[in-house]
Amino acid sequence: MDNVRTKGASELSALRRLIDLVRRWLTRTRKPDAVVWLPTSARDKMVSLARENSPNETGGVLLGYESADAAAVVITDLVDAGPGAKRKPSEFLPDGYWQEQEIARIYTESGRRSTYLGDWHSHPAGVAAPSRKDDRTAQKISAHVDARARSPLMVIVAKHRDTWRIAAYRFDGKRLRHAKLKLHA
Image (tube, rainbow, N blue to C red):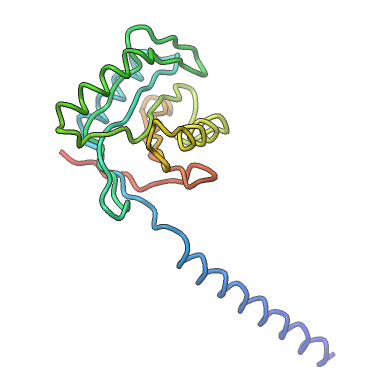
């Protein structure tokens, strides 16, 4: 019986050492999660557009800049879906031409500081969490050279009962990971 306890204890000890080794490796190799700074006016605009278009999805583009170490992302502007957008309960297709014109205008007016960071959209009958389709979209954005967004953001505004919730995610090369969202004036 003592032999069994000793064997079980040594296996448990080896497993704990392995878990500790993996944790240390992950801490060293994983980029720290980004903090996403969002103006309250941008949040209010997203919620207003989501409410206006509910029960259909809507969305748009996020513009801003990253800190040098990419640990902080500052959203300065957002562009909505555009006048020619097509909206349905579980998807929307933006007016791409209109969005490109707006992105170019904001980029120029900002002194080339506000660049494309990613997208935002609503889940009018869901949760503020990315779907598989959202993961695939982020992967496509990351691979698109012209987007210049290897780790695109995705902000999701979702209706939960009578309130709208908002959450931010950042693509890590495989999937969207939750990012800390901080509101500012």
